[in-house]
Image 1 (cartoon, rainbow, N blue to C red):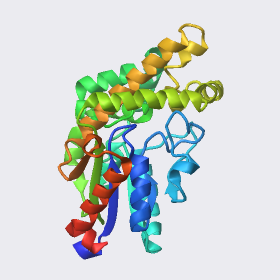
Image 2: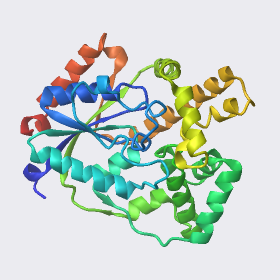
Image 3: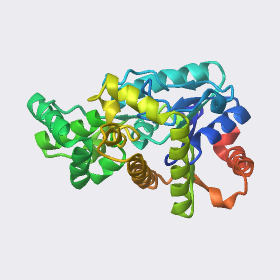
Length: 319
């Protein structure tokens, strides 16, 4: 596909709590865009606080897609995300708008924008069932840790609550001896219909990010996280959503096995670990233009630099 016919996509990436929603909305307003979420947990309905889904106020009148559109009991794959995101991007562009892709799920973003067609490996129902039973006994985290030993590259790209994807990666390895990351290398990279421009958010001092994560958790509690988690776990105690960061750490508190303070400390620790894994994934992408919060005194100054980077790039001249 010729470069001048490719669809421009402005991608805003980074770890959790880094300010992606703020920047994506600002960019959408500046360049006439609409936002497509690339978050493997915000896709689920009824988990708005735990997943830090953008509020109506944060969206600030900018249209957002792929947030809260899948029921937690449904299995949702990379292929399903790609298909939906492609439809959203085509629709946005057909109306003369700029698609802004914003999220922290690196696997989703790379598969979509690089147009990776994953090679289909045969399923093994017996192994898959055994892995799900093991998850019930030991928890999703145990399976994620095993995957991290076998295939850290894939593990770093997965939300630790994404049981279906973790099981699929382990199933593939046990069936074929090939890791998911190796499978992606063998997969077909078709010519991408997209021409992406990447902006990434981070902090030069990692502790600054961790402090933001801690404050976000405190705000989530103030916004009603406990009620949301208690209600969700009562409805679907064993589904994918129940393993989400923000729910599984509160389960021992609800059962009386742990004090709230300790449960929230565990939640903050789990979120920090997830942010570190997200950064490990994104650091491999040399196309990302990184913006470090410490270099700018205010959000307005950071957004101003983002606008400049876009406008002064060859990519920006074509949108």
